[in-house]
Amino acid sequence: MSIWRRVAGAAAGLAEGAHMSGPVRGLLEAFAGHIVHHDSDSNAQHQVAFTIGVIALGAKMAKADGVVTRDEVIAFKEVFKVPEGEMENVSRVFNLAKQDVVGYETYANQLASLLKGNRKLLEDVLEGLFHIAMADGVFHPNEEQFLAEVSQRFGFTRTQFNYIKARHVSAVAKSDPYEVLGIAPDIDDDTLKSHYRKLVLDNHPDRMIARGVPPEFVSLATKKVAAINAAYQELAKERRI
Image 1 (cartoon, rainbow, N blue to C red):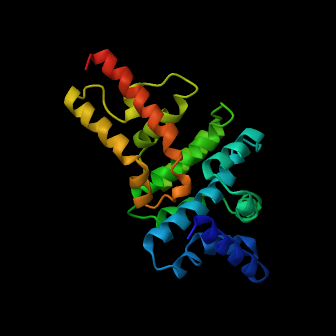
Image 2: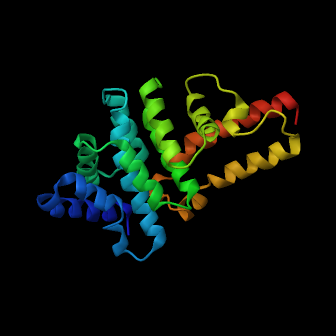
């Protein structure tokens, strides 16, 4: 079943529950797995949790610098590759999250709980949010604060957050290739090669789908792998390996 059909089911649940408990509770119930648990496939559950989680946090992310720009809206659509026929359901979740009074911390905590033990998938969520934040070519301090807080609630250290950030800011500013790859400068050549191969493998579409990224979202890896390749090539040239 397409991820968009599952999201449509969640959106329908929001609509049904709104008259009883309001959009906030309805969104959180869907976000926390009320709709998801009707599907016994754990991978499908992760896919819906990933999708609704990024939609909700993406809505909060787009407002982090005080204004939702056209570039950020375009970036959101790029991350999700939403078919025209499903945009209404996605917009319903997006707008509920954007307008409600619940802070992004609540959404981040819910997603961290849902995906506990699936650390790489939480990293994939963070990558999508970075893509939205960097869409206008400016990394606003409020956006960085937002992402750092989400990262912490996902269980990442500040150093790990900086590694993820480096892969994205490298597109608009010069970044340390060691930070982009998440390694220390004193790493030996053989370990560097091995680490690089693992990073590329971890972001292969089959690996991403296996950990719960819906097939519709594997394009998220393109920008990440490009940054990883560029950083490795810079170090390989420098080290003559």
